[in-house]
Length: 601
Image 1 (spheres, helix red, strand yellow):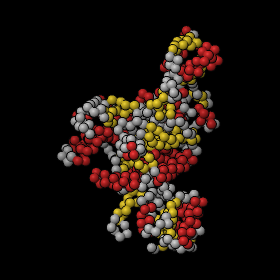
Image 2 (cartoon, one colour):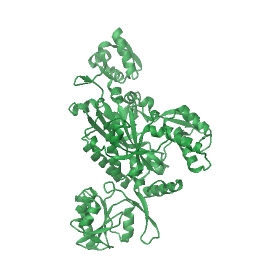
Image 3 (cartoon, one colour):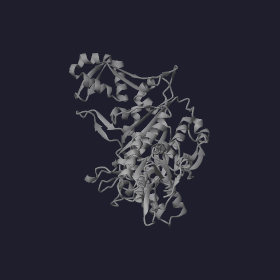
Image 4 (cartoon, helix red, strand yellow):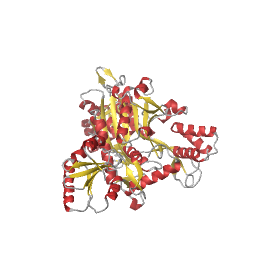
C-alpha cells in the first residue's frame, strides 16, 4: 500500500488485508468458538514465523551489535515493585462511562474519532473550525481530564453505541491485578512492561559487567494492559510482546562512541514545538537534531537512528515513518524526554516504538530503600510466625519503612501490623535494619540515567503487513491476486519447491532439494499436487514467500522471485546455497541474476 488514501479506500484496503491475514492464518481472534474476547489474538503458523523472524532480526540488530546483556524475568510482579516504580498510582488512562448502560470508553479516543470524522466528512466546516479540530488532534495527549471533559460536552459527544450521555472522565489503572500465593494477602500485577525486571536486577547486572558504565540490558517478553476499549486489531490488545532495552549511562556524560555512525541519517522528525504550532513533520539529520538540542543527547539520538535503520530494513516504508517528540503533559511519569517512532497505516499514524530518556527515575525508585530483617532475633521472638513477620517487613513501602525506622531510632521498639497474622506485634530495633542505599563510582556518588527504546512487536508486525500487502492482476487478467512483499529475512517461508508436473523423477529431485534446504536451515514448503503452476505461485505469493523453485528437469531448476516474477536457471546442487545467500542478505536478487541465465516461462 503506497501513500495516503481516501477514507473509503483505506477501509477497503484494510478489510482485504485483514480477510487475507485471517484466512491464511497469520492471526485470528482468540477463543473465537466461544465468541472471542476483545483485545486477544492467536498467531497462526505464518504469523508465528514472521514474529520469530522479526525478533531474531531485533536480537541481531540490537543485542549482538551493541553487546547487550539479555535477561528473562517473570510476568507476575509483586505490588511493592510497581508501587515503587509509580505504576500503581500513575499508570492510567482517562475513561468515561455510558451513564445508562455502564459501557466504558477511552475519553481521548472519542474526541479523536469525533475530530477525524468531522474533518473527513463535513465539507461545510469553516477554516477556523478545521484549524481548531486539527489543533485538538495535535495536542490531544496533552489535555487534562477537565479539558477532555469540556471537549466532550462542548462537541456534544455521546456514547457511540447508544447515543446516551457520558460521565465526566476519570482515571482507570490499566494493570491486571492478581494475588501471589493462596492466602491472597500478597498482591501482585501482570507486568505492564518488561523494564522493571531489569531495573530491580541493576546491581547484579552492573557487577556482571565488571562494575563499568555504560552498558545495556535487553528483554523480550509478554506484557499486559487492561485496555478500556480494545480496537484496531493487533494495534491495541490486552496481551502483547514487548522488546525493551535499558541503556544505563552516566548522567553527566550521555555522549555515544558510535554516534558518528548514524549522525548523517536524514528522516522525518516532529519536534514538540512544531506540533503545538500546527506545523508539519520535517526531515532533519539526526546529528543536526542533537547539536541543535531538539534531541536531548547523543545516546538518545544514537538509538533513534538505530531504530530508524531497524524498521526500514525490516520493510517499513521510509516515507511512512516519522519520529514524534512527546508533548509535555503526554510524557510518561518516569520520562525526561521521549520520542515515538510512528508508522503510518490505514488507521493513521501509530506509535510502534518509544525511545525515552527515563533519567534516573526507576533506579532511584528501586534503590532508595534496603530492608534487612534480622532473622535470628525475629526467630527467637516469634518462633513459628517468624516467616510471616519477615515477609511483612520486606513488603513495606518506603513511607511505612521510614516511619518505622524513625520510631525505632527514638523509642527502640514499635508496634507493627502483620496482615497474615491479623495482629499487631512489637518490633525491636535489633530485629530489622532499614537504610537508604548509595552507590559510589570512583568516589563520585550518582544514580545512572537510563535510555530506553521499547518496541511494540505486534504493532510493528501489523504495520509491516500493511506496508507489504498489495494486489496484482492474474495472468489472464480476470482476477486480482494478493501478494505480501516481505523482505526475505522476514518472510514466514523462504521458498517453495514445485515439481512442474506429477512425475516420480521430478518428485525425487524436489525431495532432494528439500533435504538440501533443511540442511541449510531454510524454511520451505513443498507442493507436489497437480494444480497448475500459476495457481501454486499465487497461493505462495499470498503467504509472502519470496522464492519459488520449479523442478522441470533432473539436472537444473528455475528460481522465481515473487515481486518481479523473473526467473533464473540454477543447477540442482547449487539451488539451496543460492536461496540461502539471498535470504541471509549476503547477496541481492539482482546480484544472482547476473550470475545465472534468465529463464523465460
